[in-house]
Length: 228
Image (cartoon, rainbow, N blue to C red; front, top):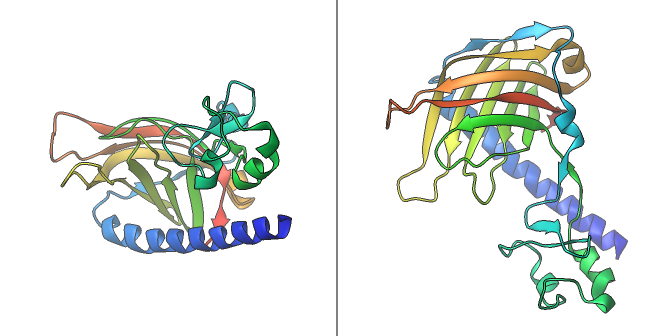
């Protein structure tokens, strides 16, 4: 059973990396020339409170239940078989706990970004993925969810940063890309050399649809730089 679960995780990891590769290949090419280049400020020691990295969440569709254990949240994101072994209150049947937790991913996902923003269909995010494209370039994107459909995307090449917001709207013809017009990003050089992105940023974006509504995204990042 353990071997089957590990094989399932390995297959999911391969699929995820293929998806990420496509995102990196298409997104940066699509908006790279339209976003204003921002010069990176490198510092030896970036100050500030990065304790948000101690906070964690369950994967999408998993929440803490009234019995103090992880269980299925509303929305139908759990494996289908999990729902057949729950009682009327959504609690796991006592004789089915073993199989339930073999099916359900209860990994503690530690937060990698603390941010605030204004963009269409944005309700917050706690996660950003950072991948190395080459020795001197990386690509980052924040994760979306049930209520958040826009993703901050950052491309760094040497000492230059470009950013955009990719809105994958739930409304017809609502999807859009918003290009960065100005802002800043400060990165800890010491952690960067260790393969960790520790940064503060504040970006503004052009809103051609409603110019009087400024779009912005600012916050802090702390996460490992992963290989593609």
